[in-house]
Length: 443
Image (cartoon, rainbow, N blue to C red; front, side, top):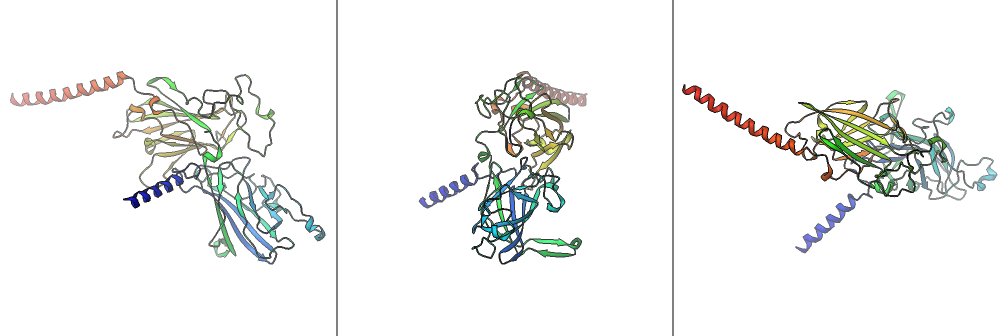
């Protein structure tokens, strides 16, 4: 009995650690991660040609501006002689190579690498570079979810001549943590239009995962609710994203975005409009119309952040009736089935390119909205007990604070009584017709 209890305790601890918010596991995207892949292309004593690739394998979470900033720790004081497709933010002290007549690109023990900006010269570009560090999600834009760069790595004057993988990776994006690289099967490259395949001398991969808790100690969005059958709006819970009003701005005092002083290459801390919820983003779900076989919902995302436009934003919604979506107006939509089975209750929404794919900063036009038409599943559909409202909503991959289920809009009591009365009348009518039919047979 004691052994069984010990086993149960061990399993509980393991499960709790796996499901911990700091671990980064996302049940709606269980295989989501960013992979840093190193391919050793050429190697000679003291000089090695490497291709580094960052691939975003997440369904809906993306890396937005100012983009990734990849760093690592060299084991033997290696230097970077040359780079294409990216650059280091600092050169460092390269005085040890002053007599060589040509200084390395970077001599730092821990370099920080950034992607080149769009429009970089062709002679420094490589495939999948030069997007300013932006990595789109798999679902939203599969063509731009990869970044890559090439570099020539050399040994320090007294260092070993063979290539050694660095350690302690970091992609410089809040919320992500990376493990050390492990050796995997060498990458194969297709050449001559697929007729020939070559391969790297060696390949290593490091995996980075996201944790909302690591990204921010407080939530970043909240949800409000309303319905045509309920006279009040259920607001976001008070202090959903914190209660401090020291950094919020009041109506009439909103400073123009372009006048704010900040580094365009750094993430700007939100400066939100003063509200009860104090969130940069509010999502509103409104049950709009009830038809005989369909029902209609309006979704609005409002930006309360005076400092930021959200480019390539997205919403993920969990609701049991999303398996019967008939039409989505003015947003793109994709059904997410993370476990590849019959469960189909999760959907992803994002803007139409050049139309509403940018959620502008706080103001009159700082919102995007859509409506969706859903077919009723008569076996499950009901407006009672808050069924018509979502179970979870995520904005840009971060969980939004929902109102308490006890506060969800409910059908008026008259609707319950009227439905009960209708059921009674219907039953009486059936009995009456049955008796009338038998009386006619007797006559």
